[in-house]
Every structure is written in structure tokens, then in C-alpha cells.
Amino acid sequence: MYKKSYHKPSNRPGSGKNSRSRHFSSNRKFSRNRGPKKDYINPQRFIKAAKVPTENNQYIATNSFSDFKVNPGLSKRIAERGFKSPSPIQDQIIPHGLDGRDVIGIANTGTGKTMAFAIPVIHHLMTNPGAKAIILAPTRELADQILQECKSLLSGSRLYWALLIGGSPIGPQFRDLKRRPNLVIGTPGRVKDHLERGTLKLNNFSMVVLDEVDRMLDMGFIDDMREILRQIPTDNRQSYFFSATMDTRVRTLINDYSKDPISISVVTGDTADSVEQDVVRYSHANEKVSKLHDILISDQNNKVLIFDETRRDVDKLSRSLRDHGFKADLIHGGKTQGQRKRALQNFKQDKINIMVATDVAARGIDIDGVTHVINYSTPQSFSDYVHRIGRAGRAGRTGYAFTFIEKR
Image (cartoon, rainbow, N blue to C red; front, top):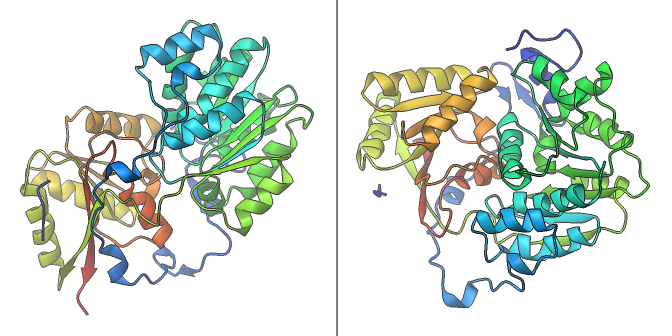
């Protein structure tokens, strides 16, 4: 079956390490000891063969990156990155973004949506002196990842940026904001904190991007998001909304804060077609650990992302794996941003080949070469499962996902 293959927290509302408790969706049920109650997911939904791409279902782009009429400096950076043929979401959204339209992007994870909004946003900033844009993301890691992508296009532009996320010193954020940045990227909670402090004002911003809207709603950021959007003038505002799903909550938010948006959907299915999915059944804790070790030692070249349920579970499992000689590290919400960033960097650079994480890593983390995703604990919902396994099977490669299920 197995295939080879802190800064000291502020006392202000919504800041500090304990603020996560207010970011759970109010419509979730909670058990006494384990947090949100899990949805029941039929184990058969965790079993699915990977599809092999064929010439018939390969997307043929209408444009090439050189076709996009963007600032010469930006065009040069795009060429230096080696971009030639855009992905479906990039091909369809970038022209509308450059035309100034409000855009709704519905797409699976790993479709290249960051560049779909980064290119038109940065073009606007480069060609309109004094223009400002803000990008919101649900997690620190995704916000930082978006910044890194944008910085590769901003080189030599003389534009300033600021990254506003929790878990990192706030002093440097004050310093960056004093420079009146053209581009602000952050998580809703920390952006709201700066608005309340008066260190950030949005009255002269003309572009806004909400990435992973559904995830931000799941995390309970709805009030923060609405307050941020209310403070951005509606005259000449361009808005981008990206979401993996389009339920009533997402649609209501978009309807309230967009004007005549164009909707682009490139969703290809419930789960990543390029991921081979199976279950691992176990009877007791010792057998569970043993079967996990079997998977991990099947090929030492595998790059594995393991999801467990709580911070304590992640700490325990990561420590156990290291004690057994595996090169493993961990990330979860209890770690500082610096610790999480170092762990991810070591994983990206192959200094370790196993990362144990809570669902903080499930959304938007682009780690090249992940071969396996292991759900050591089952996800809260099938949507969470989809985003977990989306870390594998990218760039035309087949990935593998194993979900541990206790025998009944």
C-alpha cells in the first residue's frame, strides 16, 4: 500500500498569543477538551487514485507573460524570473486586473494565484506614484510568502512595503509604517491592531486583495475584515477576492465590498487530481507509530508533511521522530514567527525532510518537492483535508496522501 515515493504580546484586544481563541468561527461546535468538534468524514473519501495528465486536458494559455502590457521594470523582473506561459488563473485574471476590474478568483490551492494578483497590483503601484495597496492573508506564513513573491518583482522600483503579522516584534513594523509603504501585507488581526493604534491609515489606499477569504472567515476574522474594508475609500478602489470555495458567507462579503466583479473559476475538483490517496488503518497507539515509521523509512528521499491535531500532539510526535533518528522539525501557533520561519526554511532547503504541523501549515504554504502528506490525525472537515493534501503533487509530479484511521 505504501509507495516510495514574541515579541511580548500587547494587552490590546486581538493581539498576543492568546488572541487565537477569538478567531474560531462562531458556528463551530466545541468539545470540552479538543477544541472544535470534527465533522464526520467517510474514510472512503480519503481513497482516490491520482489522475495522469493527458494532452487532451492540458490547459493552453491564451497569453504569454510577455503579452501583458505592464511597466517595463516589472516586465524585466517577470522575464528574469523565467515566467513564460501563465497558469490558467494567471492567464484569465491578469488581463482583467490590469484593466482595473474587481476580480473574484475561485481556485484550488497551488494554482499560482499569488502572481495572478501580484502582477497587476505591482504594475498599478509602479505606474501611479503614491498609489497604495493592501493584501490580507489568513496566516503569518502565507503573508510572508506573498511578500517574498512580491519583493522579487519590486526590485529596483523604489517602492516600500510593510509586513504586519503577529508573532514577530512590532517595533520594526512601526518603523516600516513610518516610511509610508506603498504595499502593506498582513494578517487581519495585526492589521486591525495597527489601525486601532493609529500607526496605519487606509484612507489613501486604492487596492485591496483578500487571499484565502474562506479560510479567514473560518478563523473568525469576519469583523476585522469588514472593519478594514470599511476604512478603504470606495472611489476608484479595485478589489481582489480569492477563495477555494464560494459559500453564502464568502458571497455576502464579496457582494458588500465589490463593484461589478468579474468571476474566474479554475477549480478542477474536490481534491488534488495529482495526489494518490489512501488510508492507513491501525488498532492501537504502538501500531500507529510503527506504521508511520514504515512509511517514513520507505524512501529517505521523501519530503513529508505530517499533520497532527494539537500543539501538544505536534511537540510530542516531532520529539519522538527525532529520538528515532528522523530529520524532523515542527511548526504550530505556539511558536514565534522566527521559529516557524527557520523551520520552514530548513524544510525548503532539505536540511530536514519531515515537517510536523498543525493546520497552520495547510493553507498557502508553497514548499517545493513535498512528496507525501500524512494525516496522522484526521482533519476537522473535508475542506481542511483538501487543503492539507494540496501541499503535495505539484508542478506535474504525483504526490501521496495517507490518512490514519483507527479500526473500529
